[in-house]
Length: 98
Image 1: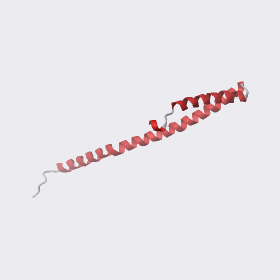
Image 2: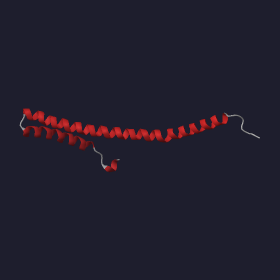
Image 3: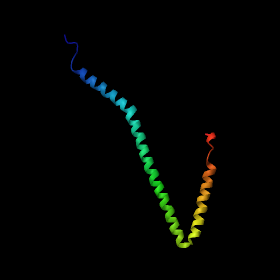
Image 4: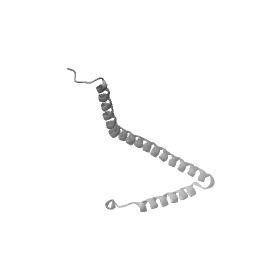
């Protein structure tokens, strides 16, 4: 006595397994892949941004050095960086306020 009625049950079992595996993959692998991709791109952007800022600062020093004495360049850039630091210092929050 054969209780299985035809070869359709193999297709149904295969489709069920495929849908379960796809559902599990969508809930686990896809978010992990997205997070990993965001971390990699974030690190690359941070490194390239830092290098760009350093190179622009060096270029600005060299450009201003052509027109001014070196103490004038240091005074101008020192004043700019001091103002930027004071602005950022003012924007900080105490640790208890978070």
